[in-house]
Length: 83
Image 1 (spheres, rainbow, N blue to C red):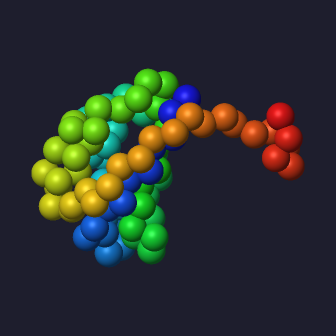
Image 2 (image 1 turned 90 degrees about the horizontal axis):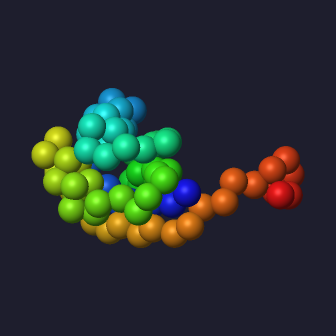
Image 3 (image 1 turned 90 degrees about the vertical axis):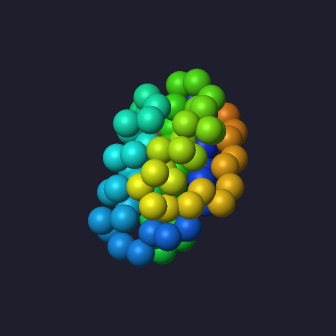
């Protein structure tokens, strides 16, 4: 699994978060996506490294701006942070 964190400018409320999440789901196959207007971030989990250009294009088409994109391997942790 790959965890990708996007810094997204322009989200002001929960509806903005929903718009960004929907745009991401339409652009690429994701296991999970969550956005926060308070932190200005969108975090997604995918099986393969995502296409950054497709993500940027999809999000920016909805009126928001992607400031940065960072991906790293993700390992699910068990109960209490143990494997």
